[in-house]
Length: 301
Image 1 (tube, one colour):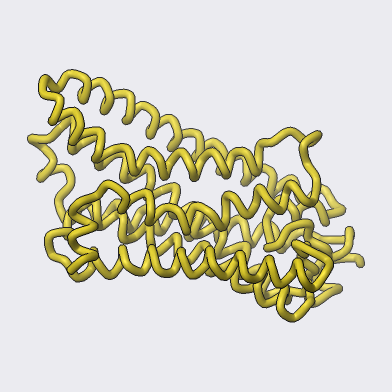
Image 2 (cartoon, rainbow, N blue to C red; image 1 turned 90 degrees about the vertical axis):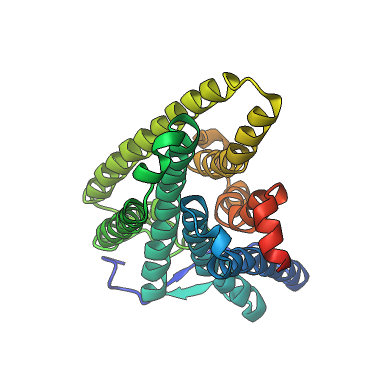
């Protein structure tokens, strides 16, 4: 195959070869997908309908839940459909759409997690200025910036990836279309453009990571200075769900893309990809609602 216009579809990596295991994969993914739909759907509905939750923290959480739904809906339904139909095929345009939506969703989620760290920092370290710094206009601007950053990042990655000539076949070693796996099919030096874009994205990623870490260093320093135990407990309760979601998001994503090549195998890559692309959207609603009395009360209503 001389270039990427020589074929009209890609072949994804299947979770199993036998029909029984394919049905097991379908049932497992269906359960996770329904849990993600239910959890994120309830959070979106509760925040939208309860005026007590119309605060910056819950506004950003609503956006995060929307992106979680978009992320898992991009990869899981196609994988389940392929298992039921005993096929591995995905169309060329479908693959391009998957790459765009996955990068857009994950990039947007990371941007919102960074914004939410700033929100927690202002709430705990600058409480007297919270109303000024986190007013409606500022929140809308930060949310728009997070959506826009995810969109343009996804647009650049998708355009670069699918403009590269591919001559190593059309088999993607993953259960969804992923940029690093598609780059492995390249046979020209033009893939260096995408590698350069990946380096820029990595720098932005670590910039946001450092911002989150520094924010929490100052948050924990301020919390430890609170004299009352009840005050410290309340402050920690505000931060721990967000910190848990950030840890889950970063640990699974970094392990998937930064693990040593010696630990790489198709089976392990499948499991790791499922951990960072499928598990967090289903688990995040549980983490945020577990110790959140306001959200629990809104859900009861």
